Image (cartoon, rainbow, N blue to C red; front, side):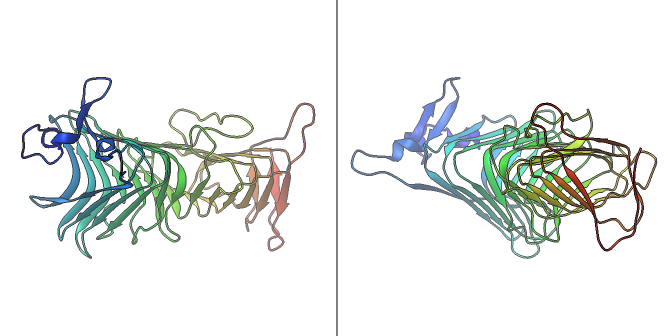
Length: 365
């Protein structure tokens, strides 16, 4: 915890590594491990047993924040237990990991235990987990399928500045975001084929690749509902996506980026969703359950799939330009509520292909 890590008594093994940040907070500075004739390449933090489980890094209100400066080194956080294993746990407190290279956070609770690599939950105080990484953050959780690998429970923020790898899910949801919570990820690979990659609900929100410049691959479904939250990947090419308040979105902006499953609406809340696909990125999947869908295809982006207009609010608005393509695989008739193409000097057209396996009609209002 923040109080125990920054204890200056002889009982604290970190006491010689304690420093101050520019705000006067206590910091565990692993840069102090380096000597003139030797340097440390990787820092390992092993779990310490606590009641009910083992947790590696804990921040609980009203303790001091946990601030760890890895000084550019790689970091491995490991937690294992038979009942509950949490790699990083923030309960109304703050955990900040600064200047990290490659990071691995593993939580192992066997077959039946509860495990999350990162778990944050606020109450009266917001819970915050921040990782400033120059390389990938790999999250692994082994246990029953009830807990997400990255779980932002109510009233919490989780912000991983660089890329993530959340593929070793063992059947779990990769990322879950609850009411009043926000997850921000710099990019990377999220989810495992055949599972739910991202579950956003109860007014939560997720922002992926907001600043652009990172590849994003999503394997598995994005599920919105009960009621839905917001999902945003905001930095699109050739321009930023405009996302209505309360809507959700993804934005794929290079030829290494893809969404490989459906966007499925299951709840009773706002069903608006914006899909940005550009610069050779691909979405292979469908819009199901009555999504109010706005698709922005540009610069060779491609969508292969169909849109279900199951209710009066499940509209389909499309912008297609500069060699982008939609291959419509619907077996029923489809209506596009609005369709726009490229404008301005040098603008190029986009394309809509009807699947050869269907005789369904396409109507543009």
